[in-house]
Image (cartoon, rainbow, N blue to C red; front, side, top):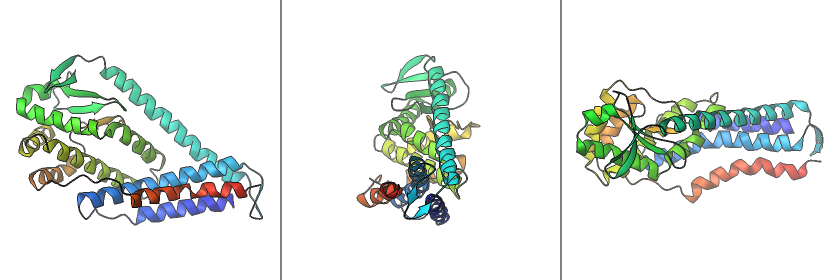
Length: 279
């Protein structure tokens, strides 16, 4: 029965991921559907593995005997998750420690760290309380109003705690990279994250200035940091056009997760119901 639980979780995860297709609909519809399809399979697999692991290698469940295979599979998956989480947290912590040695400067009312590089770069780096970082190249290239627009964008990321949220999403991506459409959903969520930050920033600064700043930053050969605690101002270059169009169009209201969304995620806890039946 333990092995059946794992097979059901894997099959459902594969099926749900295969239902994802090219994003359609408005911002809110895309965000909630993509986030649900990204979260549900790995959370279901983690809860199933935890349930199987807690039930051990022996015992009787609904009249059937289970052995070592399901236990070892569950232990391996949980071990992978723990190892990946520690590695991502350690890499991020080391990078944040390095960033905190950079000099500070007050820009547009915000204290930022200055990175010595000709690249046009801005980001927030950290976890719950990240650091604002801009490059010397960006400060030398952009004028005051465009720099303020960039800072407003990074403040939006801080407002939504994107570094913390996407650290968790990055961990789920790491441990289930083998599931269908993991990378496609990841890129979609990154794009929607940037669209959300753009919309928030555009409420306080001219959206045209923000679009111009985005184009200037993207025009420089950009190195995208694949570190879970880094949220940058550009993201994937192939989605730049979508962000510019959104800034120039009528702004959309960022969605709030509804009860329907969370009720689907609660279903990932169902494997825990089988534990009391184990003996």
